[in-house]
Amino acid sequence: MSFGELWWQGYLFTLFYDTDGGGFPVWQIGLGIGGGILLFGILIPYLLGSINSAVVFSRLLYHDDIRNHGSGNAGTTNMLRTYGKGAAGLTLLGDVLKTAVAVMIASLMTAAPMGGWVAAFFCMVGHIFPIYYHFKGGKGVLCAATAVAMLSPFAFGCAFLTFLIMVSMSRYVSLGSIVSALMLPLYVNAENLLFERGGLNGLMAVFMALLIVWCHRANIKRIQNRTESKLSFKKKDK
Image: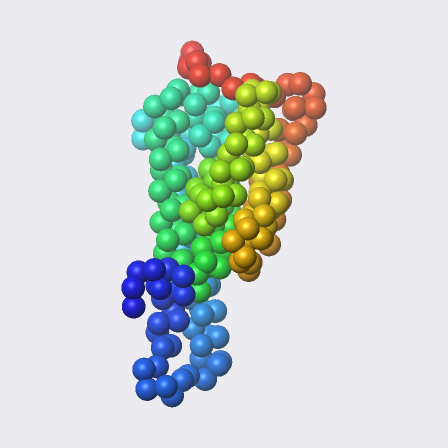
């Protein structure tokens, strides 16, 4: 079986492939797929997502905790504002890699691409509520962007363009993230119609969008009060 077939059909399906044509009981197939999704689509992505790059690099490089500074968010934007471009770049790379690994493992080991979308959501959950850091993490935007770029390139391109437009107009990274998240389900479903496919991706996109908006509820209040920090590439003095 080729890599493409593994990617689109899911590795678990190959475990139940019977060359003799005898087949396997439906309950065994369902149990195998369900167990695979639980392990590779939920548990492993959550544990990978809980590895927070911002916390790791702020401790390793600055002997500090990023959650004690700025917005208190353990994410790329707060790293940029607090420590500068280098720290933000490392944080971005770390969060991209952990999400990519989680999505790839789930896509290969479960009924892809459904498994990839489930893994993306629970990687976000792990990033936002990391088990290793007292369930206090980031907001999951970069995790969502990485996963969508892998699973739905058209939707990612549209959401990223929306993000750039909103940030360039307002200089609020949070506003760009919120609007892009709200538009994501529409973009995903538009891609489904364009390429005549469907599945759980539209529903998972809704869950991801709602989670991102919920994580930005404090930012929404600050935007309304005009107290939200605007994007700046200058490193703050300590």
